[in-house]
Image (cartoon, rainbow, N blue to C red; front, side, top):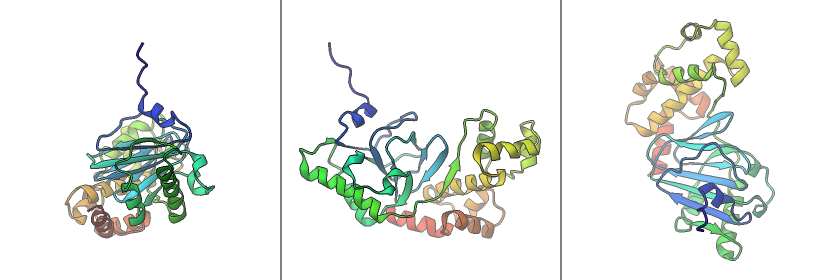
Length: 269
């Protein structure tokens, strides 16, 4: 009887001490999952989100995501991509470092990008028998830990609350409209106080803060994926003032919208 082929996730964890490499220009669609190895993912030419049980993290161009072993997650692509580079490293292979135990999205330096790209013709399991490749992968994991200190803090909380999820979808699809607490509450047959409490108890942020984060994250998508002017993106994101949009964007992303577009587009070319 022919053995049943291993699934993608089974291949990652098949050999606990190996490093697993998978580069593809096609999305591997996975449900929420975890594995016993740390995951390094770098996506070229597209917009993606890392989804965990608690949050949604925007993954812009020229950034990589580090996912520690055991963290439930999946990556959602919002556009077509040029390439998705995935590297899975067993924890015992790396030197002790608190970096490896925390999820984070970090800017990719030229050095790290070159190191990731160097592996593009490698695939699947790399064991200690391939000593040079195995040492290279250990070095990559340790270099990343020593070179990256500040994660990109663009995080949108998520929830499984059945009353709140349709409200979050409504905000997402109407982000260019005026979104007032009392109006949304009325639309969903709630009092303003009840809606405010839903946000605080389930997302640990206010209604206004959630709307602000949604608008900025979607504006980031437009900055990277369209040729709309910053003013047009500001209005499409629900802002009536370019100055307010720019200041809010800077508050969250620590960079102005025009600079965010310039930096990420230049480094992606």
